[in-house]
Image 1 (cartoon, rainbow, N blue to C red):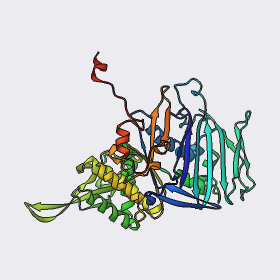
Image 2 (cartoon, rainbow, N blue to C red):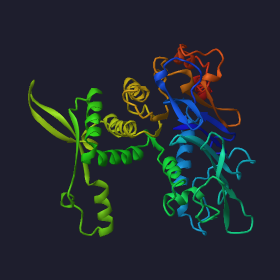
Image 3 (cartoon, helix red, strand yellow):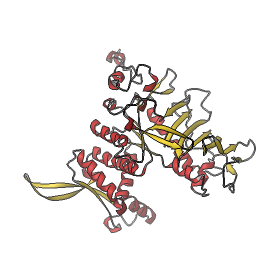
Image 4 (cartoon, helix red, strand yellow):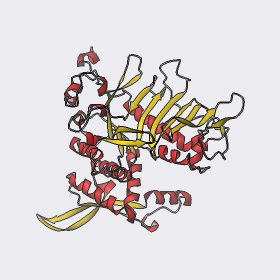
Amino acid sequence: MIIDFSVANFKSFRNQAQFSLKADAGKSKMDNTFNAHSTGSSLRLLKTVVIYGANASGKSNFIRSFLAFTLLIKNSHKFTIDHTQIFAYEPYELDINTQNAPVQFKIGFILNQIKYEYEIAYGKNRVTFEKLNFSPKGQVSNLYTRVISEKEDYDTIELGKNLIDKKVNKKIFKNQLYLSKFGVETPHNELTPVFKYLTNINVWNAYDKFSISDLSKEVSNLITQKENKFLKDRLSKLIRLSDTRIESIGSKELKKENFKIPDEIPEDIANKFFQENKIKTFAIHKIFDGKKEVGKAEFDLTRNESMGTQVLFALGGKILQTLETGGILVIDELDNSLHPKLCKFLIRLFNSNISNPKNAQLIFATHEVTLLDHDVFRKDQIWFVQKDQYGNSELYSASDFEAIRDSTNFEVWYRAGKFGANPKIKEIKFIYE
């Protein structure tokens, strides 16, 4: 369960942008919130948060900050001593004071009823800060802190007094995150669960066809497995209720002989192609003779169905899996190729106690203003991004406005520019004068 997240000096965010999933004291739409218990305290958190902003305002950059953060944790263990450049280093470039300064991330979350805070900073070729705290008895205690070395090729780690298992290597290359080691090389009862939690934050871009293709393959693999029959059935119902005229969704694993791969293709490439495409997903439609139903037929999902149906299959499958298992889902452009009514339904799946018993969380960015419905969101669930005169993206909440209430017509306010974060489009003559 994410409590808060902050980013600084990343892409269009020069100053620190602070994002919170803490619910305010309001009592409206309590199903949109849940109690997150940790040792010594209890927080009320939000199940869903939406982010609005004009084109190029920085809302996609904020979503990408989650991706950069999680990918660096997952992959930095691969960096060698002579591979010094950190791929996720994308500082704010419109200010000479930040062009070579560190990128900074900080996240607060609850895992196994214990509150954690993990903070990192890194430059082009080295990590400049790393610290992991937790509060096992209600008070903050350090698990480890990185000690920066100015001379050696590596940094050292100072272990906290409350870290039980201290039989670990306390040296780390300058371009690697220490936490990254505990997901691949070094199993650890206290640190490996933190690695797993943070790297299982799912970040997807619904506007990117490659991202949707990868997600579609992931969902296809899931519904092919017998143990995921309930997921497959629910996904079929979701697609059917969306008025697609699809009866159900199916998938099957093809054999290698089903593919006509030319003999001149190297075997390793042919095997990789087969592994990536061996699952065929299909939509089952009714077949008619005039108005009489005469049977059913399978149609290839990616070849015969609309882009909207393909997006719904990919996102819907991931959403249903997340609701079933719990976790965090971060999506850019949720409304892409989906009708606003369908988007509202997907959001309500997270807000409902029936469909979301494990309190999964959804964070998403969108342009679709009709989703700004006070029947769907509380004011503390609505966030905005806009750029200032220097090109710096600023992140703020609807709750920051004193006159706002949970009963306010959010869409009217946003369209009228009262929240900002709206494009300021000039007249036609501005282009042609």
